[in-house]
Image 1 (cartoon, rainbow, N blue to C red):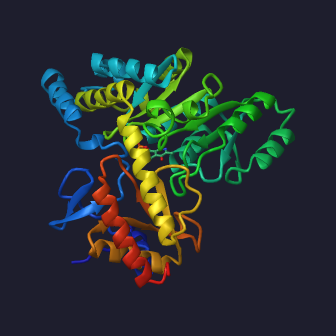
Image 2: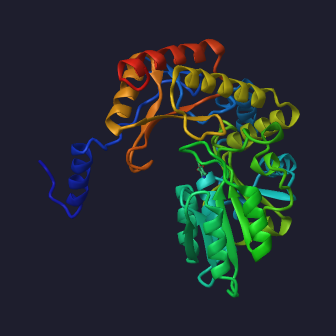
Image 3: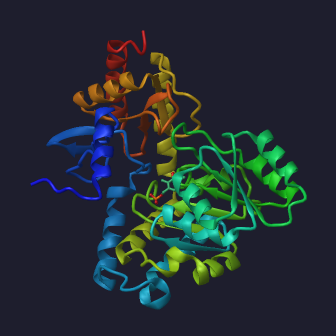
Length: 396
Ligand SMILES: *Cc1c(COP(=O)(O)O)cnc(C)c1O
């Protein structure tokens, strides 16, 4: 029997999504994350994951997680301030601080939570945030939670940002400029050098969320601040452990006093339990490997360059990317969705992104390159892209 409830608006909303072909059918992996994954019992080349460095199934990380589980068990037992901080959490934070060349870090359950934890500590109802129009949802939510006034500047438009700062030049509250490091839909970079200059000129704090830059940009993958050589000029760095680090978690890096403050007042730190010992240990193993060697980072960039120049030679438009994120611009959302379906039939798993994730008329296949891909994998993908590109009239 069908229930009539106060929640019928949800059923109606879902029906609308399905009618408009906007309902997202989530694929189920029957394997771990790697260059290839099992879906519906078939092997598919994986061009969707943020497992940039192949750490998600790395043997050293798996062994570290197993050992930590043996040593500490499976759960942290409480929020960190009460009884949930274990020595493995502190070891991870210390190693991360050294890796990021910052005084201190604090690890949270996710990058999303890291933004929710730190932004409301920096600004409140009497303050102003300047935020890039394409900033990540977790930044937007962190800004909203702070109850500060939010002024959005057009994507990467430093003149518009400066105009806002000029018009607020006699504002007496705190001011915070926030940007993604790498923008995940196009793979372009925030203009951090200019943001640092403007922040210094107008007396603002700065926060960069480097989720797609951790493990990817800078020496040994230490991030966008290192990439632009801005050490000491960006106040707060937010990072994730859920992408290149191959595991899950997030962190805030900055001065010792910022981190001490977050441990006293950051709500997702105070009121939500921490990473499991296994996660902390796996992340620590990833940080140690990256600190010692940059071969995975180099492999990632060489794979990205190989694949991106291959696509360009075939005549594809890959937009403005400056990173291993590779948007294959299609334009029409229907063609892009059909492209993704055809790729899947040919054993290539790459998602189509359409409105409202990207602007109308700018639908694309987003390819995520990983150090885990072999040259054979990339050649296979290029061959399939070439065939389907011609079939669907995307290339000649
Ligand atoms: C992916 C992403 C996050 C979320 O990270 P999780 O650790 O998965 O919560 C936050 N910010 C940006 C910019 C991201 O790209």
